[in-house]
Image 1 (spheres, rainbow, N blue to C red):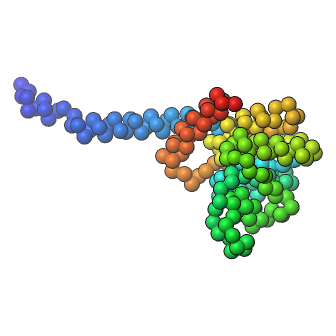
Image 2: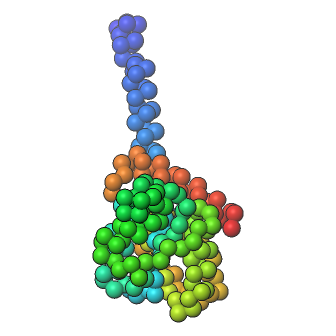
Image 3: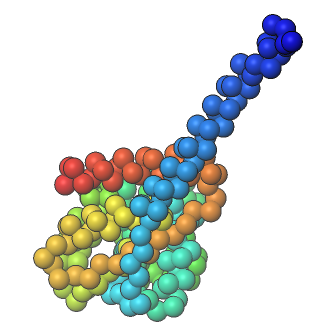
Length: 207
């Protein structure tokens, strides 16, 4: 016959229960983030475009593929969107540069000619403002009839939706090229996926 002591020994400990709950919660968060990424990441390639548009931020991630696409002849002009953020000191220019200016310096080092790089104006930080400033540039250069937007993969659906909304009725072909960020940990990747999904929902409701 089992004694009360035997039954107590067979009960799972509080530590075991808490650990199990934590493991299940982490697994659920990870699985849901993977599902969100399948919604957030889209690709709409263009074999040829009049210009490439590089979304601000993520220089180390986004710029090398842009340089490669340029050298492949996908586009002969690169538009850099401007988030208005100051960055580090440049001994070359003897002043702090904006992030968009550092992006230009990076592309120059990657072999992109200076005449092929355009720094768009700054009005405010955000995808909608980047799209609107791109529209202003395109309207001032009517020879541009197609553009390929390059951005980090999780940002592609909101970016494509925003540019298509802003350029509606302009007759401009819009493509998007996703760039994976392999430097992020899985936990950081999950956080970014949740945040980007919220931003996407906000954009759909706001605009």
